[in-house]
Length: 304
Image 1 (cartoon, rainbow, N blue to C red):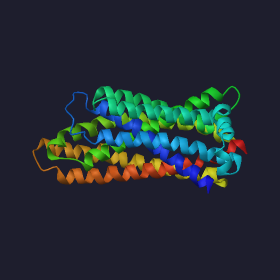
Image 2 (tube, helix red, strand yellow; image 1 turned 45 degrees about the vertical axis):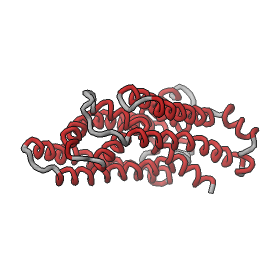
Image 3 (spheres, rainbow, N blue to C red; image 1 turned 180 degrees about the horizontal axis):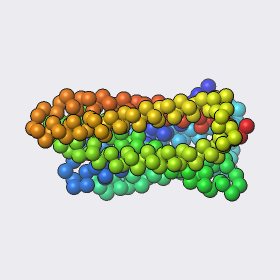
């Protein structure tokens, strides 16, 4: 039961972190001139994301301590929690993540929605996302390759958050769309193409680096023999599906929307297709995060 709680809390933290980084960065990148659509939804959405990260990190700290201590009652003892926080990088990272998420809540309350707030939140999101490298397999590598592995893990986490968080923001834009927003939404979709391409390139490169350390060339042929390897294959399949959906958005659906708007036609049908495609891509991304959450609790082939 505790192991299931650890996985669920990992997924919640990942989900909150991607919104906390990707959404404000997407807003900064897509609406530079301040001519974006109605963004009243951003403050409550980001507040929820920050709360999920803060509370999820603290709950995960207790759950992880309980797994190591053998019971929840033992984990709640000050000595057990103190050891996890002060004696393990995992505990330190969880506390730091909760503190940063808490500070973002203060910023959300204190600052008006706009470029200053988005910059603060995107910066906090980078810190929160990168911290997952210290609670995952990247922190377990020793020797001369340790720094390289942790760096690759950080880049991977930040890139994933950039892509998935921007998708979440796009989904909210399309769900709350009003007719005057249509040109701004089209510009945002075109702007996301560059951001998404950068995220994919970084994901692929950092993913290859992570795989080198966690699997290695010698064990690649027998990847499907372990549960970790099977989940990695499932993760790659979901990633390819997301790429296919993203390609459909960029090269087919977004140009169709642009052509309709340029011709003065009704963009309703084009936007409905885009909404469906982007929502599906977002759901696939959520499933991918669930697979990653499970993988984080398993030993990679290189450790066997």
